[in-house]
Image 1 (cartoon, rainbow, N blue to C red):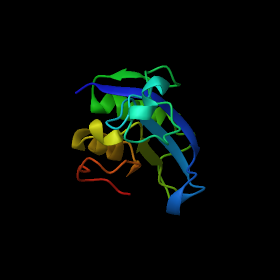
Image 2 (image 1 turned 60 degrees about the vertical axis):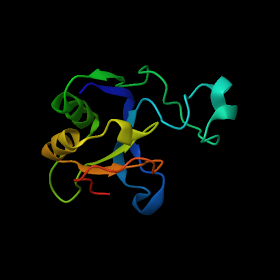
Image 3 (image 1 turned 135 degrees about the horizontal axis):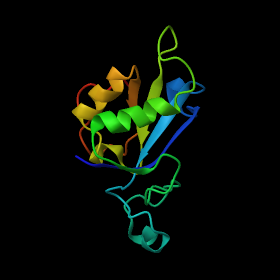
Image 4 (image 1 turned 180 degrees about the vertical axis):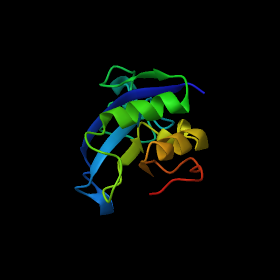
Length: 132
């Protein structure tokens, strides 16, 4: 599978129970509820989205041809060691990440030492292996 990624960046989680936790955000391109183009917003199922998930032009964005290649790109954004008590954390988001996130990628992220979370619109079943 080729993964289409808008951007990959390091930040602090800003929502939910993990608020304030260092994280790498892996933003997938594409969504099943809206095209991401303003001219289509009135017809979108999800009219309140505030996220730019169109294209691959963000930092770290692009087409990744394998789970290992994408997991390595995520790991490269983590600024510190990936061992010890502060386990690295990746948040898979979008668009709709569950259009692309699959078991091989989750396994590759785990192999890089990451705890894997997802932010989803809830319209697709989540693959097994997610941590959050």
